[in-house]
Image 1 (cartoon, chains in turn green, yellow):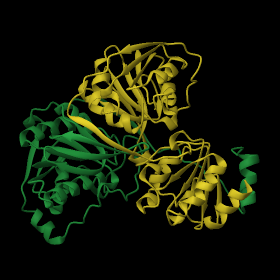
Image 2: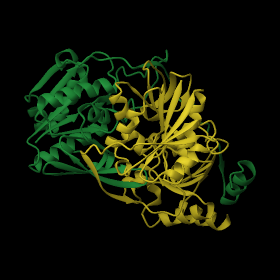
Image 3: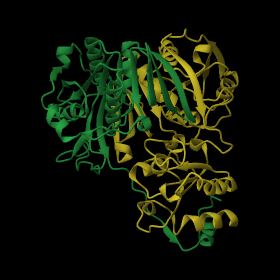
Image 4: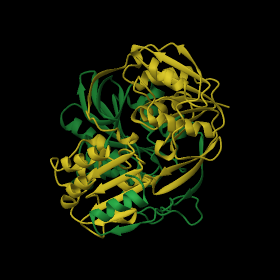
Length: 249
Length: 309
């Protein structure tokens, strides 16, 4: 079976986010970029399915500027067989990303699509579900376990209050949660090899997808900072403050 | 303008998060219909009908809605979407699963996790794990919105007298099926609904040591939470995690023990009314957001606190 995995280029999760002085957006100039951590988990899961002999081919797909090639090369170094970049200049909204993925999924006749549940920049948590709707396929979101069994896949999902397992007919869309696996690091020889793996570039126009704007970003601000309070010296003082000052116990 | 609010409920009554989302819906100033879906949800629908400012309740009951399968639930919502300018739901694992599917079926965008209603098309929402707040405007005719419950007060669950109208459950989509649930059993309040939370981090050291937190929680009638570090260390299950990638909470009292205060954790609890931090490391970032900080060993502080309260 063929697996598509989504790879989004985002700010490295260790980097502190700064808001631009004109409040137009977050300042990403000279910022270290990386694969979105949830996408990394998606890539790892796909590669494990290939190593287990279940997947025949893993294709990494990214939607964004030409700079995304860097993250696609990383996915190739981790073990993806080839990559596709849907090149676009502007920031791409989730629904437009989902429409591009739907076309690629159809062209590649993919049996399983594994995406991160959300990206750590826009925190939307939408693309996987939208892709499933557009392709009229089932979805297993927030997965902590994925078992392919013949023509179906059992997905254990992290839900409020615990875990829920669902069975999906293939083709299906799975989105990853943190505990699905621990991604490996790319080894140097694999990074060198990845440079020779195929990376094709396409566009919304080539795919026949019209990107539409639905949501406009008006302003980005730093959140209101919470003021630190006082240090107390003992448990007795803490109890007294909570009772008499804060009045919460 | 009319709003369709998708209820989160347990069959018997609405979840508190639904009442917070109802407040957000009321701020739009539109006519409000609540949709209650499930396999046995009459009582929850009756509860919805009593809520302030609700003009109509739609109740859909059937096997296809028994386990919140997004494939079926989204079909139900889309089939009743016509005439609504806004379709809203409190952020939860069900709505996060379902609402983007609704949006795509309607060919519109979605506004996830709003924390403020600016006007009927402009909203504020956190991005970058709450390290920035975006103001966004939707140009879609139908606006699909999930609401961060912690950011809105709960609407009154009384004073209303809406009619409950039964609607048909959708046919099963036939591509997915429920297999099993493995739910965490607890006598304590639900994290997102609790007025008090006692939370532990890596500093707690082990699964067994969480008993110390549980003892305090039981004394306070509090829920027990944890940081991602404690979850990743295997001390407690994932659904106890408070933070950007876990639960977003805003109780009256949040007590953090052995939690350093990583940004990802702060994003999940910084809207709490009163924050208490107990940590050995006086430089721990958690003290920068705590109203009351106590530098000390949690293994000394916890038993003393539990005893003296």
